[in-house]
Amino acid sequence: MLSGVRSEAKERNEASHYSIQETKVSYSEKCSNYTNPTKKVNTYYVYMMTNRSKTLYTGVTNDLYRRVYEHKQKLIPGFTQKYNINRLVYYQETSDIREAIAREKQIKGWLRAKKIALIESANPQWRDLSADWFET
Image (cartoon, rainbow, N blue to C red; front, side, top):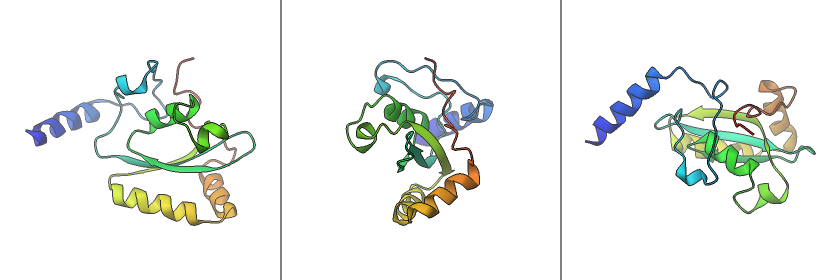
């Protein structure tokens, strides 16, 4: 039965031509009540976020939309809430959670200059890659 559920989800994802950059998502007050229609099964993201003063945060998630929303809305207490980390400046995806966690740990172990070089290799202007994801 589980493989049938996976194949149905895979068919829905293949039928959908949406990408992260193309889709605007309107979230309810509570993220937990929301199911991301573009979420890929078995996809994990390593991401970096920042604020106006370029404080960096690195994380891993299986739902980048939800997690960025949580950061932007300050729904989870901690570092990102305290330092107003609200701009997605880098992400990469993988289908292997172990690979995602290893990459997150690798990046967290880097010096700041190497993290900046990674961001600027993909996003030289430090644009918020999630700027048009959410309706206001």
